Length: 75
Image (cartoon, rainbow, N blue to C red; front, side):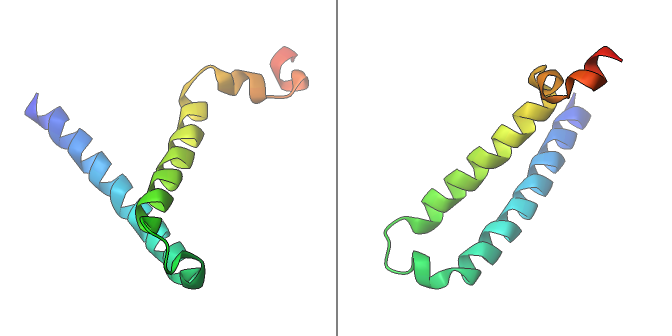
């Protein structure tokens, strides 16, 4: 059981590292937009996590079936 817990923790750690890289890069690129705003990093992080979750949810649910064209579904 500890082995699978370790795998989950490694996966979460890898995901957070990649996400932090993207967030830091975008925050540095658009520094003037975020400058002077309260909680700008926290709100941007929440938005990035929401977008990432939405994209992942499409890939792991049956909704993905609806996104295929009719030619692919019935052939």
